[in-house]
Amino acid sequence: MAKSKHNYCVIMAGGIGARFWPMSRTTHPKQFIDILGTGETLIQQTYKRFKRICPRENIYIVTNEIYKSLVQKQIPEIASQQILMEPSRRNTAPCVAYANYCILERDPDARIVVAPSDHIILKEDIFLHNVESALNAATENDWLLTLGIRPSRPDTGYGYIQYVDGKKHVYPPEPQIRKVKTFTEKPNLELAETFLKCGDFLWNAGIFIWSLKSIMKAFEKHLPEVDMLFRQGIGKYGTKDEKAFIASTYTVCKSISIDYGVMESADNVYVLAADFGWSDLGTWGSLYENRTRDQHGNTVVGKNVMMYDSSNCIVNMPKDKVVVLEGLNDYIVVESENVLLVCKKSDEQQIRQFVNDVMLEKGEKYV
Image (cartoon, rainbow, N blue to C red; front, side, top):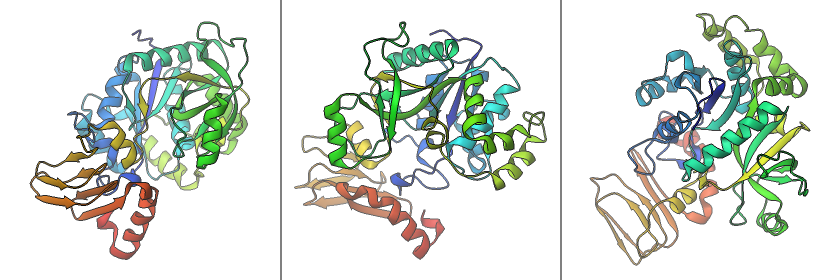
């Protein structure tokens, strides 16, 4: 893989992974956990992946300031100025704006890939080839690109991207790049089934590729108030004044996603349709799909778990605890520290509500 000196990567690592509670906690969220048992945490895998196409010094990690020590511990080779610390959560648009201005100080000709820290990518070579194709397209055109995954099922947990299904290739070196027609948030099952039948819809992977010039122009046009806030810090990024400036900026910056604030408004948005073995690993159900299962469809972590007349369950238990489960079908059973969760897999979308309820009724130490 080629490593252009203008290739930059922004890894977003500030989320708390509430849908993976109780394993994922506010103090130690899922991106810092070896959730698949591979010997590497999700953020370590992500960093290692992008190091193949970006110089090490060009990789930035944007995270909440309470996770700085976790990032430094898990990725010790990254310099402290490459860890951009957010004092509070403001969704993804402020995160991107912050990174833009840090990169602008170093390289106005930068071309950037922005990616979450907690996705699974099984076919890394194909993925990196797709990213390089998109980076080349972004260098040659004033385009904002995203990666879209060809859907294999009518999934209601993902957003969808519809593309213009024309016969003419908009970018001949990469025929899978298409102009985006619409974005749709997570649909109901009936709509998801319609999308699948149409054939011109893709899952939104939340991975973005653009030149610094194009994304900064898009912020000026579509999110001028956010852009103006971060523009006021020019000269402070990379200096001792950066932390105080960011702290004051985040108190007044609105919370808005890059999808809603820019991508859904811009008319120069393109998608590269791909298949690189992707999962956003957003739920226990998606983890179930990516773990090895026994002959009864159970996936179990914990060496002392005994299953009787149980099938299609995902079980995650401390290694020293003896656990006996009988008569369960399609359940999530997870214990972590001081919390035990037993929940139907079909009801896992309620876990966010469980977390809110536990925090209100039992206290923050449980979340």
